Length: 470
Ligand code: TRP
Image 1 (cartoon, rainbow, N blue to C red):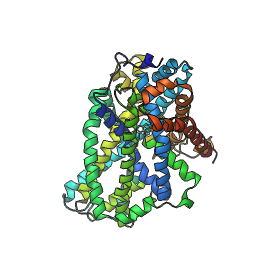
Image 2: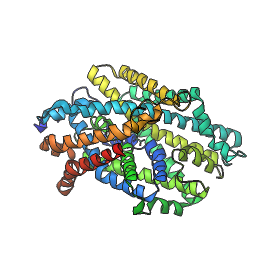
Image 3: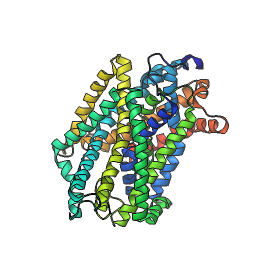
Image 4: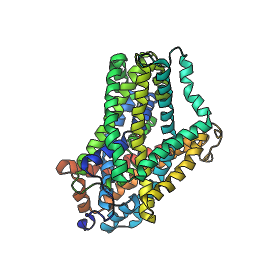
């Protein structure tokens, strides 16, 4: 039975090499989640306790779910719902499990729509620093002579400009569509193979720079001192949500990427590399951002404003500040683009395979949908700030369109998708088929199996219930 689905399906695209798969998957994982969301969440949840629990979640929950997802994709060799259906069929169990793929594809589409809004802000800051370089030259700090309040005000004034928000949002989405329309090996892979190494080079340079100019020891103490009293239920929930978002889990993205992997890729090892790289980037991003923030005497708990407001203020006092700021946002842009490409690819692959549309048309259809939702998200910061789409549900009361999409996907779709994936892979899928795909032996295999069958579904259900009831 296990052999029935092991060959690559005719016509289904593939990565051109194993390293292309690793880069694309790392590219999907490393994004705004690491650079923007992780430091914000860590700061808002008190630092060390959050960070250490986050690492624990990545290893005990994120990694096993990641392997389960790429494994389903590789066996299924199709878009996410069809891949799950194929694993189910080859395991003689209900093909109704394909709901995992359908829900995931829908959620990825929702995430894409607001992810591109934030991608637009990144484009804006690239422009801000580029024009600052032109005005003040390359050697000086950023924003010479301007008031810090003024620099902080850049973000609210962007938010206030509905037209600009929509334009930047659609610009970022159009770039994403361009690469997805070109296909797996010549578009998506191209972005990963060229932009990810550039990202890592810039990232390293800025971190080293930050460690010399900033307050590095205070940042290390803040991020890694474990204070058990700070580990509340809310902090745990935030940490597990962050682990999922950062690893691109629960919403079919990794099923889709796994489906382009070859038979000779060891999925167990590859998942380890993806999770390791993603976590390293998040931690290093924290170590790059917090020293600068502490040195400038700014607050660690500035939340989403940390990357877009605190950091630009701190670039003011630095030699080469405008250049560093420019490089920083270009780097974030590369990371964001390799992630948004994966968010668009999951629904596009589905439309392409299920309805039989050419890739170009499928990209346009999904992109158009994301554009419509994106405009609503962009306008929820200004013209439509008072529009609360799910006001009748307490969890989402008085939540604007943008935050509703963020909340619904992170608090509902991702955990539910992951719970179903674990139950399916752990209890219903044919054990031989799973053994054949996962690339793990001995103790590692046993551990992974136990985590997927027992630990992940139980822990996730508890966390989901807690999140919904509190
Ligand atoms: N992981 C990405 C980030 O950290 C975002 C992302 C890409 C994502 N694909 C995803 C999140 C799929 C959830 C699901 O920025």
